[in-house]
Every structure is written in C-alpha cells, then in structure tokens.
Image 1 (tube, helix red, strand yellow):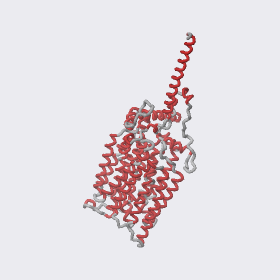
Image 2 (spheres, one colour; image 1 turned 90 degrees about the vertical axis):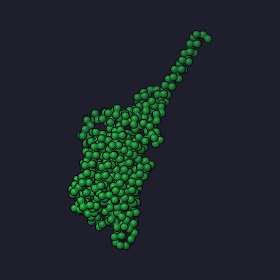
Image 3 (cartoon, helix red, strand yellow; image 1 turned 135 degrees about the horizontal axis):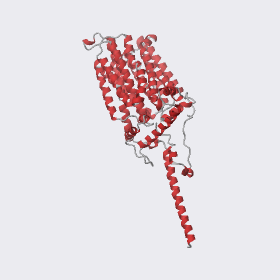
Image 4 (tube, helix red, strand yellow; image 1 turned 180 degrees about the horizontal axis):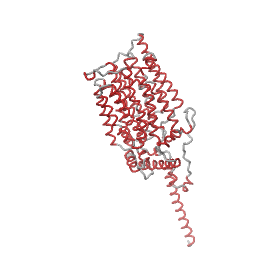
Amino acid sequence: MDPIGASCISFHFQENEEAILKEQQQDEKFNQIIASCRSLSYYDGKTFKTYLPQVIAAFVAALYHVAGGISASYSGILMPFLQRNITNDTFDSDLTATTAECSWIASVVVLIVPAGAISGGFIMDSIGRLNTIKLATVPTILGWCLIAAATNVNMIIAGRLFCGFGSAWGTIPATVYISEISRADLRGALVSFTPTLASLGMLICFAKGSFLHWRTVAWMANLYVVVSVVLLFLIPESPAWLISKGRDEEAAASLRWIHKYQPQPQNRNESMAELQLDFMQREHRKKLAEQAKKGKFGAKAKFNMFFTPIVLKPFLIISGLFFFQQFSGIYSTLFYSVSFFEAVGTSVNPFLASVFLALVRMLGSCANTYMLRRFSRRPLVITSGIGMAISIGLSGLFTYWIKAGTSDQTWVPVALLVMYVVTCMIGLLPLPWTITAELFPIEIRGVANSLSFSMANVFMFGAIQSFWTMDRLFGGMAGIQWFYAAVAFISSIYSFIFLPETHRKKLTEISEYFLTNTIYLGSTKSAGKLQHNRVSKEHSAELNIEQGETLLVNGKD
C-alpha cells in the first residue's frame, strides 16, 4: 500500500477512534446530567435501616410531648378532688375550688401558650430547635413544683401557667425539627409521633391519678421532663437550621448522622449526605440572593412575608381547622374527663373510663402513624369529622334519655364516646398539628408555626373556659354533645372546600400551591411548579455538567 493511502487509512481509523471517544464522553456527560436531574428521593434507601436514624431523631425530639400530655390532662384528675374536697391527708383539708376556679385551672395552661409559642418561634429560629426544647425544662419544672407544693388555688394556677409556657417551648420546636429532618414520604408518619406521645402522657396521668395523690403525680411529672431533655444530647440539630446560620460543617455532620445507613447513590461519586448538603446549600444561597434584593430578612421582613400568599393563606386555612377542632369537643372532653363521664349519667367508674379513653387515644395515635403514611390527608379529616358527629351526637341522645329516665343503658354513652375518640384520632385531632409543620416556608417556619399554635390555643382556651357556661346554655351535657356534633360535621364541609392535599408533597410544592390557589375545589396547577425539559442525546455534548446540576430542583426541603 502506498504511503498516501496508508496515511489516509490511518487518519480514518484515528478519526473513528476520536469520534467514538467523543461519543463516549457525551454519553458520560449525558448520564451525569440525567443523574443530577433526579430528585434526591430517587436515591433514598427503601429498607427500614436506611431511615432508622430519622425515626430515632424524630422519636427523641417528640418525647417532650409526654410531659405536655401530662400537663394537658392533669386538670382532669385534679378538679374532682378540689371540687369535692377529696383528700388523702389533713394537709389538703382547706384546699378547695369553685366551678369558676376549676375552669381557670383547666384553661389557664393553654392561655399562656400563645405567648410561649410566639417567643419560642423567635428563640428556635435564633438558638436552634433542640436548644429551645432544652430551655423549656426551666418553666416546666418550676410549674410542677408550684403545683405539688401548693397551699392555695392561686399557686396551682401559677404552676399551670408555667407548665403551659414550658409545653409551648418544648413541643412546637419538636414538630418543626421533625418536618425538617424527615423524608417527604415519612414526614407525616414521623410528625405523628407528637400526638402519640402526648396521648401516652395523658394515659400515664389518668392511670396514676386513679390510685396516686395528685401531689405525687405532680412531683413525678418532672421525671419525664428531665429524661426527654437528656436524650436530646444524642441526636444532631436540624441541618436546615444549621445551614441557615452558615454552620455548614455542623450541618454536614448532622446529615452524615441522619443518612449514615443510606447506600451509595447509583452513578454518583458523592454520598447521600453530600448530595443533600449540596442541594440545601444551593437552595440557601438562592434564598439569600432573593433576600438581598429585598433587603435584610429581619423581623420587619418576616412581618411583611407573613402577608404574602404562601404564608397568609395557609395560616387562615389552618386557623379555621383549629377552630373546628377545638369546638368539636376534642380537648374539652379531655380536660374535664372525669367530670364529663359523671355528667353523662354512666354507671362506669369515671376514673377508669378516663384511663380507658386515654388508652384508646394512644392506640389511635399509633394507628394514625401508619394511616398518615398510607392515606391522603383530606379524606382522613373529612371522614373523621363525620364519624365524630355521628358518635357524639348519638351519645348526647342517650345522655338525654338517661337523664329523662327513659333509658337505663348507661354503658352506651361510654361506648359512643370511645367511638368518638377513635374517629377523632383518624384525622381531626392529629392532622391540624401535622399539617401545620408542612405548610410554611423555611424562612418564616418557626414564627408561622408558633402563630398557628397560638391560634389553636386561643381557641382551646375559649372552648375549655366556656365548658360550664355551655352546660348552662345548652341545658346540660346532652346539649353540649349535640353542639360538638354540629361543629364536627361542619369541619368536614370546611375541609372538603378549603384544605389542600399535602400527602407526599414536597414543602416547596406546598408553598407553590398557595401562590395561585385558596379554595381547593377547582384549584389550578401551581404556577410555580417546575418541570424538567427533555434533553436530547444528540445535544448533550453542548451542556455543561454544572448546568445539569442546576436542574436538581426536586430534592427534599
């Protein structure tokens, strides 16, 4: 073969090799771009071990709710003693309370919560979610000591005030923390730890109150506060909060702990923790750039942001849901549990009935953990309201017949109230608290959650404080139960019209929904919803890998 022909063939082969190599490089770039476009949830392990750290962290953070549950239900075991002057020794012989004083003892614990919630929101955004829970031990322990050593009703009321303040600081940050460290598909189930553990605290309180002196119960309540706070030192702070404070190294360590059992992501050199950190840092830089255009994001900026659609709309919707929750009797029947059972005319021991109801509430919370992961939010709330209306409405009917002497089936109201508790645990009790943790953007999440909790407690105070007034207004316990039934039914209609679906939605998607929608019925697609453009293989060589990384917009918040 002549030299010219040989060189041409050699050049041809070389050209082919270069083309093949170039095509391989294009394929590699294309695969990297496709990998970067995937949602971080694509790389999440699907075994229990992979999300075990999130479960542990959520459980430990929510453990303070046991103390909160004891505080909430304590008036139920205390007031029968004060009203009837039932004592175990001579020290309490002069400690009695009127009906008005008992109303304040029951309701004052939630009256102070708005102040605690709002201040706690600023504190948790300043010093962190877990540090705020630790700080809550101070007012809580002081409150229980005042109650246990009380020599008059005013000391009990003061102690209840401190306990309410501590409950706000200890429980609200836990809900925010869990929503920030959990996967989107696990968030609802993990947040439901909070009502489950609160229900456990109620069960403990009623069980102890049935055979222990109320002062002993108060002293022992401090134990649950101390244990829950000590365990907080075993889990890391929220990485989202750490990044918002520029503490990236601590955030990286927190993410490594949270994702320690995650497998190595396919076709990626980075670990799951590194991918998550990179995404959160870029999202934070993007938010800082947006804030820089608008000025420093201080108290004034947060105040202005509160009136934007992505904050104000969910706040109004969740406030309405909290109103129906409170005036459907969910917490009134708890705070006045023993007195309530006595008033419905049942022959069952009211203390034992309260213990049994608390047990049902706790088991319902455990079942709700599964249901929140399995089912959508809206159907649960709607079904819950209808079930509550039917059960407590029928309970009111039997109460009326028993009081009128036309029925001797005194066990029926207890059975129907058990059904009432079961149906409320399906949705209307836990879901408003759960949804609140999902609705607000990170920049104002602490404050917005605190304001929502404050509204819930304002409504709770009104419902509890007005219990005996409604008893007189509606002609007894039967009328109160019918009122609760009507409110529960209206809550289902309200949820059907206004409540958006948040199940398996990313926090950014939820915020985007409120940009263009208020009423869920007939709602349009979120105008801000981001979609990936299709990238053809033949043009992939022109794309830079960094440009591909910017398309990773569907990662977890």
